[in-house]
Length: 368
Image (tube, rainbow, N blue to C red; front, side, top):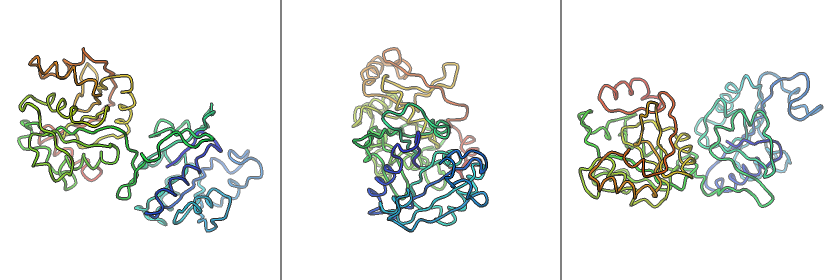
């Protein structure tokens, strides 16, 4: 989904660039959404005589573009290589209904590129980009309402866009924005409280660790599994990094994987966290530009170091803590520049016991 700070800043140009890039190998549906607040009074969009709002009959209307020579945005999307292109005009209060009818036409599994701000309030796309002009100072109201959801703000200018479009990936029909960062999954624990290996417990008929990998693939340029049982996780298809000194706990796992990482930025996650909020992870990665570590907190100085971001610059402090005989991750905080970031209530779920696992499956197994 592509939104914009205002009119004529390059939203359609970006959509066309992506269609040209990916449309050669994948059938892509182009979608333009025009959200209408009211059909009477001053038109909020094209001005008097525009007709976009006043001509709408009912709560929404779906039109398919067939003229690739048209100068309209929909015609440009078709000319760029989209297989089909649709224009959804919809009353703001009927966005979900209008989208549902559109999905009935194109199919819920259709790979699409959609131009809209307001639609982001009712659906979560694989990637949400927002375009602004290099000299843009203000954002229109529909843009301000969804700016916080943007995976990336793309700045458009005479020379093109400031973002590397090669970081946008299409994998198995799913869009992803790849970070130049490594995801490290810690799978070396003893699972003593669970009683059995929790990394292999099933969520939607696949091991938790496979579910975590599937959530992270495409978002990270590298994925590492921190484990001393290298053969056990070979089915995942990612490099497994054993601890340099076994039996030293998760801090040794973090240190060993950081040493093997190909990137400065590293997201560390334990294998007992089945649901990962990618947008929160992106926020942590962004906060790491001026910190050695980004550590989430849940109040009362309760840290979540096994769902955190570590720069390679933190490795010296971590190794010094390990050399001292300590295994506490928090002992490295004093030697590093740490950015603490607050987790919302229930934003992070750890499955430490069988009761927690069964409760999670009962509530979320179908949705995850």
